[in-house]
Amino acid sequence: MAIDAETVRKVARLARIAQPEDRLEPLARELSGIMAWIEQLNEVDTDGVEPMTSAEATVLPMRDDVVTEGGDAARVLANAPKSVDGFFVVPKVVE
Image (cartoon, rainbow, N blue to C red):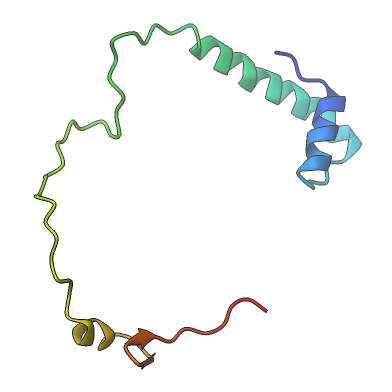
């Protein structure tokens, strides 16, 4: 997939990134190279390859899903900088 300077200009405008005119053509070549590399990756045969979350195969410990009465609210609220009537008090962030 070839990317031209006009496409770079449009994407830069949409992303609100200021790019000088003399930088559009080199950036278009760079992005075209990246897209060519991505297309090359699409040719790799990945049938039978399990998805990984890391290079080390690990198994997460499992525990029983047990319903409890919950934690001790007084102990939890003891860590709060400020609490009122059993609730955390936080500063207002929406005007």
